[in-house]
Image (tube, rainbow, N blue to C red):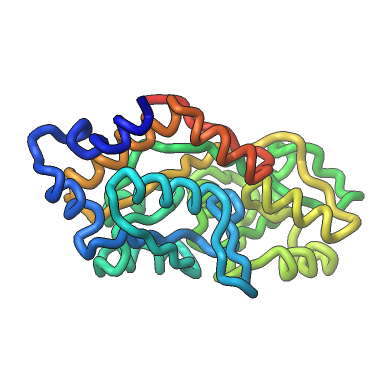
Length: 260
């Protein structure tokens, strides 16, 4: 049944469009061009030596391209701004990006395919025990400027000071924590766990402050392409593809998003 479905995938999604038009909606050049956030293991990983991309982005893009009957190319992007600019310039057909209302004014988001939980990391000896302890007067929280967690904290922190830093990475965040320049660093749990394993003397808080919706974006107004992507995510959820790709990637604090 899966082989039959794959062959008829496009027509099943949008019966009012011919198969060629379905391909044009997502891969007008004949190649499905995708991009994702380099350095975010929740989406995928890039092997710098070989150039090979692995993780959810690789599995999902390759399966979608196979169903469409086209080739694919995955190119990492440095930050969310670069991802959206590629979509808007039509140098990428789809991209992997965490949903945020401010971003949805520029691109169209699919339904989420996974939920990536965000938390904080602190010094092991810190008196901060949970997320509520972070939002207190005098607390300083660092996050990557433009990151989905940073955007969320900018709207929700009431008493703590948010330091939004362009290009902030775990190495710099660790140095800032050790120097007493910040009290906590906020990002997704997978990054934090890898950071704690790499730098002794750090502790990841047990609770989460935000469940980030990881989604696929297309150019604003590309309703046909968006419909194809949403149907693909539905089928990937039902078939177990989403669950299996997250399990293979061995991600912590990431789960399949529920159906909508």
